[in-house]
Figure 1 (cartoon, one colour):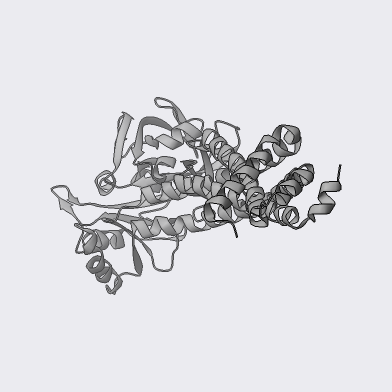
Figure 2 (figure 1 turned 45 degrees about the horizontal axis):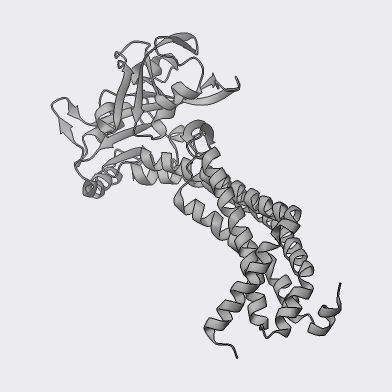
Amino acid sequence: MASPINWLIQVAAVTRFGLLGIPQRRGSVAAAVIGIAGVVAVLVGVLSIAVGFRRVMQASGDPGAAIVLRSGADSEMVSGLGQDEAKIIADAPGVVRDPDGPLASAELFVIINLPKRSTGTDVNVPFRGVGPAAFKARSNFRIVAGRNFEPGRNEVIVGAGAAREFAGLDLGGTVKIGRYDWPVVGVFTAGGGAAESEVWTDAPVIQDAYHRGRSYQSVYARLVSPSAFGPFKDALTTDPRLSVKAVRQTDFYAEQSIMITTIIMTLGILIAALMAVGAVFGALNTMYSSVSARTREIATLRALGFGRGAVVASVMLESVALALLGGTGGAALAYAIFNGFKTTTVNWQSFSQVTFAFAVTPPLLILGVVLATAIGIAGGLLPAVRAARQPIATALREL
């Protein structure tokens, strides 16, 4: 039995012969490498959509803030609160108060149709009416261009993502919403969160424009600390005058992202799995060609004392090396094409558009390379076993 050092020397020698023969098999090798690169690029690219969307929703949440909805509602679209209820919520224990009053914003959420800049197709865009405390209740809110709207006037401010993706939201322009024209007076950011996909105005203005009386759909409240959420929630849910539920903003937006990310990840894995089957067959063809072209060479080495294990290991190493070449190429391609690519998608909980950027993260790149390695192992195993089992005498007689 060969010593470990001798065995490694044998593996290196057989692997070297195999790699030197790649130019003679460049067609099949290129097909296998490109196929694996395609699988990795598609997997990483599709999953980067889910990661980017989840990142936006995570940025929307604040552990020191809460959102209050009608009991049983799972989104603002199906919630409803009266003016008296909104006041009770604002006066609940745990809400931050400053000289202007509690930092709790009673808000309205409606859907409007605006064309996308890229396609001209009308899509659903969130139009939010907010209270005076909205800008302090959200710690990451910033006006980055223009000014804030004036209360009581038909003026709007737009999120940076909405201004980029939807036509008619240029600063200084006017957007027609319903029967009215609304001047765009400012652009804001919200820490990269979902609010950057929205159009905002004064809540009483939306109430009048949409004949909503003095009703609201949610209350956003800033709490004195994350630990204050428990007493805040208990005070509201035990108050007989209310029928509401309180949710941490982090939990609310995490739940909002579940459906779309699950759909995207399922489709991405399914597509990649189907493509991976083809890539495995490509790797099998390449490695069978390699073994067939080296039949006499392998038999000669076996006759000189090279062990079967060294032959198996060398063929597997060659297969994995080619797979890693394709995998790293595919990962690099996915990063170059998809990372930071800005687009919109539908949030199925609110049936409105959310602007976000694809996020090709290190874990996704590692996942792609791991998948490529698995394809290389699957594609090299059978050819490696065949190479090790072929009879020496028969192989030496082959031309």
